[in-house]
Image (cartoon, rainbow, N blue to C red; front, side):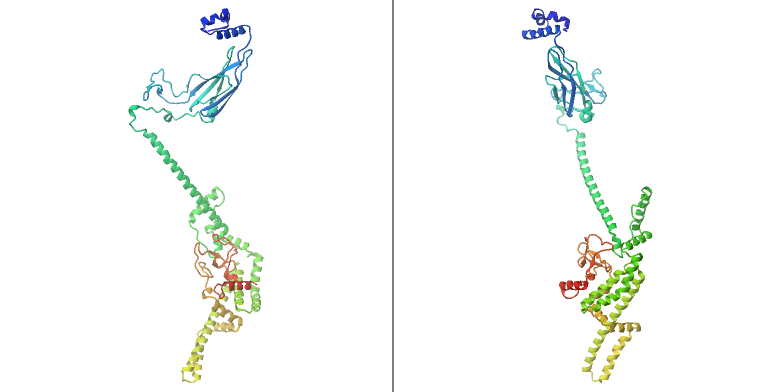
Length: 537
């Protein structure tokens, strides 16, 4: 060991003691050493300062960049820096460690079982300081880091006079942030030992089983995710459809639809739980068959269409009292039978529309009056055809019968009278009154000649009121007429919304019958358009 007390002896005779005692044979080296010893003895120069502002940047779990500010010294500059590293292992375990001899040939290994050499794996294993860098740069990149270890670095500066103290930096916190110092699985981190004598044996079945199991687990996870996504999408579609149907009021738009709710007790149980927990009913009570809620819904509907209060009273009075007089004025200004028939049909539907406000008494009275007039029309038509047939028979009997003409005439009159006497006195009076008016005869002839007999039947809401064909999904869509409250297919009327959605209440769809376009009349498509145009004027 050389100290400052030995400097005078070392510099004597141009450093002869350096050659003999220290073994430095090269004269150039001895001259430099002697020169620096003289400078040190004279108090010239100083050792470098400790490296400061040491920074580290962890680029990955295996690479770290270390930088620092340059050290300073008096007299002689800093020409070298030295970095050392120490690793601290994080392995846990019990029992002796198995050490693999990397220098030996393949398939050879030995166990360290000596108690003095066995270290407890439950404590961190710290290695010795190892020099990893010597140079003049103030930055170094270490790419030899391993998982499961923490690392500590120290830096030292050198010049011709001496060396500085060590500056230490610990990068454990940065490794923990990137999860690079997590304790690895011992089973997976243990080195695999290959023995030449066992090359023919199969590989570890546990590793193969875990690999296959991970594949099946991944497939199961993907399938479960796809199925759950599809279920969620279908559930959202069902919820959207339910909200749309509830908003559209499809149950009211079908006019006669009053379906019984399914799973009534289940939905009531849901409402009971929701009212206790949330304080509200998740399902509207009106959808569960509650009479009070249905009545409230009807009241809201009547208010929406303006059929309650003073407005409803005025509307009913104006439609029922003045409808007949206005209808008669229109009839007088029409000369054509077709135009009269169109206006007559519009008048009927107008009265039915005005009575759709809920006044059942007036609706019943007018329905009875219509049925009486309809029966009178049919009786009059039957009597007319029978008279014509009797007249033809009487003419043919005059040409073939040899009896006196008085007998033939009496027999013909008797047949006609016999037919008329079969009806009641009330029907004969209604029939005679109805046959005296010119308008009544026109209506009866037109209704029998141009319209089919099934127009007098009631609408069952299962077939179109124009073509009488049943509704089919995707082929013939059902709509509700806002004027006559009957149903029609999308081919025989004017629709204002998509066929997949229900008609609104109050609606805006109108059938061809209300529009005055009767497809069963002669004249074709152009004639129907012309009649519809004239009927609306």
